[in-house]
Image (cartoon, rainbow, N blue to C red):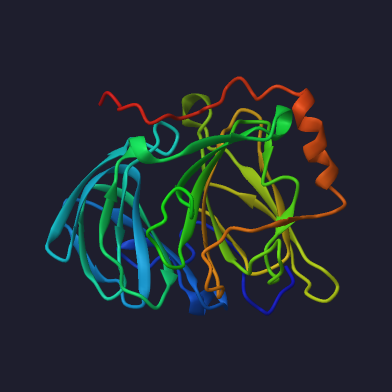
Length: 295
């Protein structure tokens, strides 16, 4: 891996700080804005301060209660990221937050300047989009994008589910320059992989590559709980191995005063988009919906 001495592939457990199984801060990532923690909760609640970071509490597995500024939000959550689209809570910077489980919960954060109000968003209000076609089919849950959730200052986040054998984050794209068509955004990819028959663990792959002026090279085999950091450069494809659906949570933030998710395709591969109108969407999609689970 090339790029500033920071590790860009973080295997599961390599950044754990109890009660968090994953901790990525701007300081450890070598950037300024985007952060992610994964909170593994038993029966005891956990209280934390958001500090400079606006944060979305997103259930990955389980249900929880989120208390902030005297408000209490009950999150129905889900059994796993492969069973349902989930509800979530937004908590502002400079807040004291308590999360009561049990379960596993992502805390997606962005360093910001303004203190906004806490909010709850039900699963039914999360926009679900199918992108691509054929072997590039995927599902995007736009729970924290500017269009899907306009009530944040810096934080942009979404979930992507890729059926086994398909590619997503394709064609490769980047967002590391400030232009009319591109916004500077740091990005975190957090992965989970659906198990195969008998609970057999799966894997996927993530590719990141740069330019001669800004080199970076990552080709990582990713498994449950792994993270790939994208400080700059082209990223994609994200590859789901046959037999194993691939999930990733994207967390993005950057310096622009406009909260915008603007990207530029790698010109060498942008032509792929022109082939999609002649192909069907993968029939397995959507992998998850907003329908309530029967527990």
